[in-house]
Image (cartoon, rainbow, N blue to C red):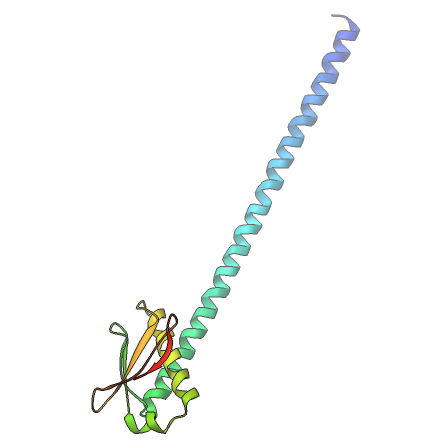
Length: 140
């Protein structure tokens, strides 16, 4: 072989070696962000799990308060119905009633039912009010 041919072959070999090194380096750097991405996804999932747990705990505390004060006598999530003490209901202002109805509707929605509620007088069974995101607050 001529010296020129050997130099060309050596040059071609060096170019190929640099190309292979570049491909390997690219593949390694491509896998590193994936690991970082999966770590970030895991941290994000843990964060939202903690938020959901905190919200669930707050909802349970609020339900316990409504029950312990006697305002909420019965809650049927599947039927989207709440039965309240009529004297306490009548004695509450409109903002309190709407807040209770909105909370109960959202609670029903989070429990797998629809996000709406019908509020009934615990003693007479008469419907007092209803709330849904779609139609808002209504009194009967």
